[in-house]
Structures are given as C-alpha cells and as structure tokens.
Figure (cartoon, rainbow, N blue to C red):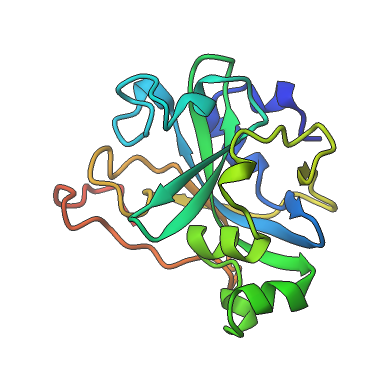
Length: 200
C-alpha cells in the first residue's frame, strides 16, 4: 500500500513500488509503467543537487506531493516527491497506460495512437491535463490529483540507466514494467560520457 510513510524511504527502493500505481486527475487516470529515481542533494542528475531554489522547493518538502517542472521549454514533467522531508528525492513519472478517461486523453493528445497517449513524461502530463497550478499538490489529500495504489500482483520490474541525463548517466535508476508496450524508448544524452559496462 502506498502511503507518505512508504514514500519516505530511499528513492531507489520507492521507485519500483510506484509501478502499477495509478495517477488520477479528474476523469483521466494513468497506470504507471515507467519511472526514474533522483536522489536530491546526493545525485548530480537531480534538479535539487545544488540546493533549494524557487523552481525545486517542492522537492524539499514532505513526501507524497507533486513536483512539476517545465522541460526543454516544451512540456511539463511530473514527479512524486519521495524520501524524508528535506531530502529532495523524487520519482519522475516517465510513462503509463491510460486506464480511465481514454476519450478525453485522446482529445488532449490530438488523436495520437493509444499506445502513445502517456508514453513519455510530457505526454503523460498532457494526457492527464496537469498544469502549473497542480505543482505541490498533496497526492494523498483527496484533491483533484491523486496517487492510487496498485491493484493486483506486483509486476516484473526491469531497470537500467536514466534517459537523457548527462551526469550520473549510468546509474540504473530507471525502472519499468518488463515487456510493457507503453514504456518509452531509452535515449542516452549525447553530452554523457561513453557508456559504462553496466548500461543497457
């Protein structure tokens, strides 16, 4: 069962627990199939690595809140704040499967194939209709944006390096449901050093 206390654990242990959980906003709900863990001040790939700023202050708050940021000047990306209050850990929700509100998600995603409705961080937030006003939302307070526990058995989890980061590029903190067709494609940052022996 996902609770703020569970999310307060080490982010690399919490991240796989989010697979199969459902992020819901209004009538659209997305079952998470891919996430990435970021360990705040201890992780050079994290937005919080250099300390708190007006952009990342939500990450330094209690677990179970929503951290939104504008990515590449194009789209919003959504994270679940994890770890103890003040540690600034978070899990980027990279991809999911729309399980409720498919019609509205299709409208928001301009009729793209169903596989791609929430396949990628920007697509996921667009399908859900998440916007800046949802930044900092408490995902367990019964508000418009909610994180619901997984139903059914735990999925088979695969892991590998995170997508598109130039620092700590080989840390295997990207987790996904093995074999799920909604998982996004891995793309290594061209600014990252040559891949190490543990990359996939």
